[in-house]
Image (cartoon, rainbow, N blue to C red; front, side):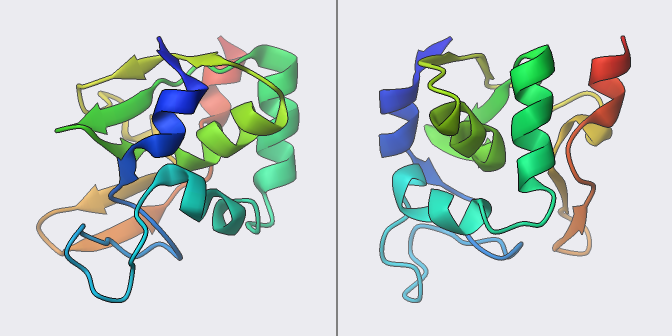
Length: 123
């Protein structure tokens, strides 16, 4: 578990619009999670994610690798909107690819959009 305030100050690898940004990307000057959360709230399914977390809690941890947020920015935004102060985090890649909001394929260097983990709330 990490405080929301700490997560907001971490750099985010998956920053805006489904593209994979790296900290040296000149088009993305501020990589902090706090800077990219407004964009995450624009997704059409975001209100459903907020309601799902309100009803069932945050079941999928935020994935942090090398001190950067690799997956979970939508969940961080939802947690902030719901005043959740501590979030579960992991440094291990998700075992279940459906647990991620998006999956990065290192072979094709593309993201696959999956939405949020609907299966987690049925268990």
